[in-house]
Structures are given as structure tokens and as C-alpha cells.
Length: 169
View 1 (tube, rainbow, N blue to C red):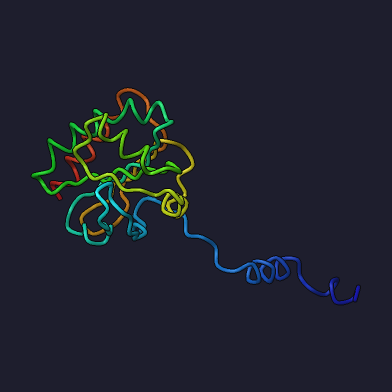
View 2 (tube, rainbow, N blue to C red):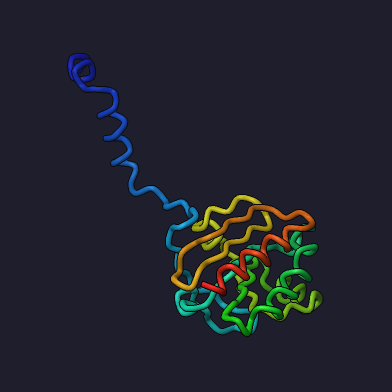
């Protein structure tokens, strides 16, 4: 047995272990295809990301317990209203365990854009967005163009610049 391991190159051993572990989860990066998903809206209908192809799409992951998320929402509402007629849509993906909290918070905040419910957190895991809020801007061809993790005051200016750029393409 000892002879087997001494003649087995270390890198081959690592590659074998990696192959046995199964396929790695794709990490979302700029210029990668946006992973498709289907989620229920706050109104109870299904919405699929792929059906938004041809639009510039902002996917914003948020939670009711997230202070910066609540701070960011009025800015997102304004951007949605301003650019919706230009081929822009915004999908607010809520990750609360209890969808009722998300629906109530969206109503309190006066959100005009679709609120999607990701209570099992499958979509946020698929996008590998570790901080809250997290925002992904996707171009008309379904490619991720911008990633934003977290929120601080003034980021809405960067969002607006990026949205303007993408709707002009």
C-alpha cells in the first residue's frame, strides 16, 4: 500500500478526490450567464428569470431583518419607476423564513417592483451572495454584468449609472 501512494503524484490524488466529490457549484461572476430560477411572487404566481430575457434585470436579495436592505428600498423603488419604461425590471428576492413577513414588509415599504419569495434560500445559495443586501445586474442577453454585495449610502448612484448604460445597449 505504501508503494502505491509514493508512486501516485500528489496532484493526481487531489484531482481524484475532487472528481469523487462531485461537480462544484458554479460561482456567479461578471460576464457569466445568470443562473435561471423560478420563484413565487408575493401575489402567489410563478416568475421565471429566463422569461425576463430582453430586459435589463436587477435582482436584489433582501430580508426584513436587514437594516441596510430597508434603507436601500426607497432608492430601488425610485429606480424601478424611472427606468421601467426603458426595458428595466427589478426583482426583489426576499430570503425570510416566513414569506408573510416579506409580504407585509413590502406593503409597508410601498414596493412597486415584484417581490419574490426564496424562503428555502435556494436561489441566494445558487448565486452565492454572502452578504445582505446583494444586488446583481443582468443585461438583456442574460449575462451578469455587475455584482454588489452590501449597501452603503450613495450606492444608488452607481446602480443608476449602470442601469442607464445597460438599457442603452
